Image (cartoon, rainbow, N blue to C red; front, side, top):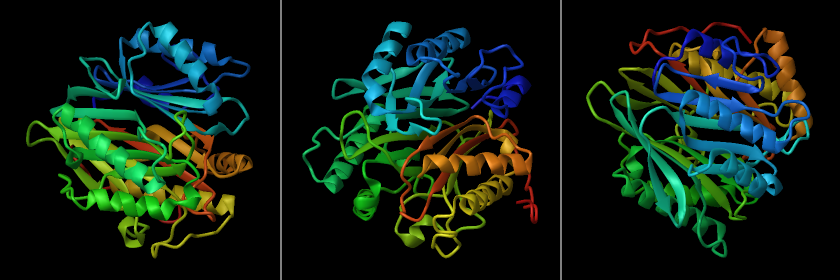
Amino acid sequence: MAMPSPAAKNEAASSTQGERASGSPRGIKAAIPRGGQIFLTIKPLPGESVPDLCRRLVRQLHAQAAAPLHLLVYGNVRAGAATVDVLQKASGHADWPLTWVEGADCDGGPIAGIQVHAFTGNVERIEFGGHVVGSVFTEGGARQCLVGGLVPADRTLSRPDQTRRALEDLQAILAQAGFALADAVRTWLFLDDILSWYGDFNRARTEIYSGVKFHTGSHPASTGVGAKNTAGTALAVGAWAMQPLNSSVRAEAIASPLQCPASAYGSSFSRAMELTSATGRRLLISGTASIAPGGETLWPGDARRQVAQTMEVVEAILRSRGFGFSDLTRATAYFKRRADAQAFAEWHAAHGLRLQPAVMVRCDICRDDLVFELEADAWSHTARFVPFPLSAGRL
């Protein structure tokens, strides 16, 4: 959670075709602090092969002397084994938590993008079930843990039981490193065939969470979308946990000014989570969609209106905490239908914005009438919060 350089913040807002002002290769979007955590978003260049994409990513990590904490890879599961093999050969030791998400590139390629959360200091790895699934690091007065690639060991169990098993395993993994599920501030939950069992999933998650007193006083921020994983299980799980080491560090849930709490309609997650330390503030915005203050879907099936509504909601969350779209360090745009990515591009053009780094992927959303969802992270090096009023009628 260190301060990004001006060049890094400019890069985080640049287009996918642009060159970094600081000289990084095309196709890599980097939010690079002056030591500490690093966020990279890498997307395929036109005609670039998957091996070349992976080698380009490894070169960038080497250039920053950074160790990956967690990789989120959005792409065809059929490309999974080959991609991991290339990463292993290119790096020499791909001992990183990696969550593979069956998220088709909206342009039709095998890989939509790779998001890398990395660190320039010491990293401790956690193994579970014979695989590296966690990374522990200390920065900004906080001990933190990233977990990824977690899937239930027994895929013959019912989907709700796989959910319970995965969350129980998450608790065991965190405990290995001296954390607890109560320390979780963010989760990613990728559900195969989400629309057929999302209600069962929510009940299973709520059951596990009911026995946990989260240290923030609220459920973690979260994303839950429909996506297969390379293990063929009902779901894959990623998580972020944080333990303050002094009183200047805190994590707190942030409400959505334009929406009701997700718990009002049976989903156990917070709309956003803000992490504050001596090195700055980070806002983690959950997967956000076109949902009204009462919890119902707005503009069912209408991509353009859902994009506009979702972006208005995201902007309201950002501005309620003194952030703007230019402060984003990572974003994922999920589309139920590949063609709806055009609605997102049109929204950008209409508002004079280029939301980068954003990966655009085709994934099912948690409701059949929802066609778009956005998750995002924002960063500010200013530790003191200054209220920023909502702008009327911007969208």
